[in-house]
Length: 430
View 1 (cartoon, helix red, strand yellow):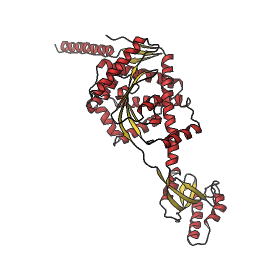
View 2 (spheres, one colour; view 1 turned 135 degrees about the horizontal axis):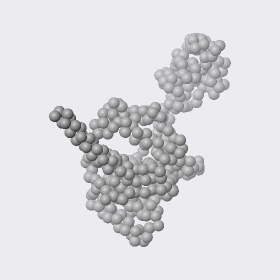
View 3 (cartoon, helix red, strand yellow; view 1 turned 135 degrees about the vertical axis):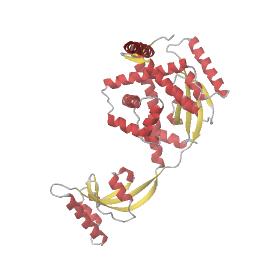
View 4 (cartoon, helix red, strand yellow; view 1 turned 60 degrees about the vertical axis):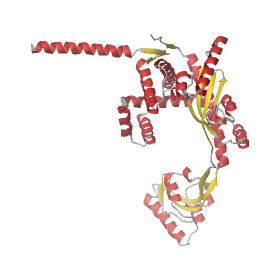
């Protein structure tokens, strides 16, 4: 009797296992193919679940699961194309690099890796799966950067010209927090398809003007790359935006709805979510001089330190001249002939040991001997000042704006080229 019961339990257990396994297989079906790769239903569900969880935390209402599914598949297609390219490029993300990135994420959230792990697992997700998602994210970012960067050239004249324009503009320090919705137009669209897209864009603007939540409308309607993020493009200056956006945004106020703007991709709708300005850029600079002695087979570490300690004693007693000692003994070819002197410099550009010892000094004070990666030093702080780096910052900003604009434009073109050349098939759903 006991044996029969045992066999019955085993039989029922096996049946339940087979049924559960069949349900998992049924659930984890192929929803799209990308060249030789596949996108699984479980991957789509994972993205949808994350979006839903985030929406619940933020109190955002979401569109239908079908809409979310299409957005998730589109994102996974793009990711798959870049991961395939990364594999062909031989790109690999080491565990050490991955661990450092995860540690930075945890730190940004104000906790430790253990805290992050507990948070991930509390959401019902495997931490190992989370790690691999981060690895994919790093890979796609590096693939994008490697392939798009080389398509970008910025001449010094472009930077100078933009910097002049920025200086002449009133309110040139303004930056805008932009929300974006794209109503896509198919390639080689018919007049009817274009008109249909236009009507949908007008309806989106109508909903937004009626006070509907922008993020929800973006998730439901946008075909832009940031759709699942609620269409959030983040902070940008006028000259950092695509030209089409920049011309339309000029003079706009907070909460303004701009569009629809027609481009080759479709109709764009923008919302100015916030506006902010910039402040004057100031940097602490120091002027200093030093003597470097490099230990060698002939000169031991202790001998090098002792030699510099003797220099310090003589200098403090007024029995030696710093410049003369530097010219005779310093092994820093860049400063020895100038009496060991460095011109005005941002101290953060120095190696940590040199920077920290230098910044700990009062004006004209000479340090005790200390070791850096280059050898043994003594350093004297000659002067310190707060420098106005606004003009240099403007040039740096002009270059960054040009780069960001060209990167966005070239990135869009590059992704489109990859998709056009790829074999992509999305399976029909019931």
